[in-house]
Image (cartoon, rainbow, N blue to C red; front, side, top):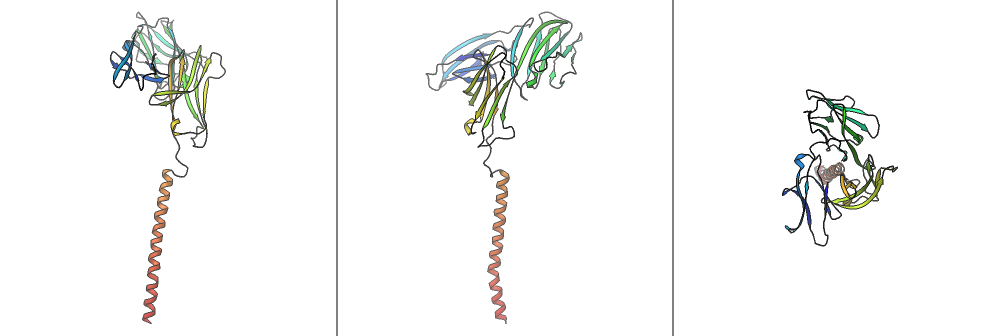
Length: 319
């Protein structure tokens, strides 16, 4: 994750990240005069020179660059990986050795259970076997070539949090700690204009110190509304925000996780403003039908009233 600040003195400046002169398509968040970019599943293709540019009216005012390099092997490495849990999120763990090996396997210790589970094993022929202990539709691997052994989880769920360890030829090699984030709104059954709404942001585990923040989003820019610093051993792993009355400028939100001011992940939450009571599409259709039926009945009555006196006068004249 990379981030750069901007001097707010210049009116209407814009910030963007580029890689080798081409704008990145990775996740970007504008918050507190800084543009944050997250490079998901970084590998050798992510290497290069990244530049943060400050522009105004199409003119370049300032430019700062950083060169990103990615280690080719993961021997004796460990790091914390933050991901949001949603239907569109996936994660790819890679176990890469500097030399050729015969077998490898991935193991997992969930935060919410504590029992070690075998996820995937690879033998001499490179074929991968996914364990029956887990959901085989969400966990998969592209294979093992004796050097690289990837493990994919798609989609990522909140309960997938835990420590993922790689073993090569039955020896410990490296591990990754996956920390997940999820958001929700209450009441879950539906929102009301005159009812308060509670936004919840929950993190699966706190390692060291993290900051949870609720940001009100507008055109990719986040305005801080509430934040809280959590530390290990904190009894609560959730940040809640109460909206007394839901309005149109309070529909787009994001819960972000920061460690030492660095953005680790963000989870969007989009609310829908309910329609006015009594004026749903179904209600409008019913009202139109009733009005048309009433007009039809009035026409019939008017026709009847005009015809009845004429009929009576004709009868009297005949007598």
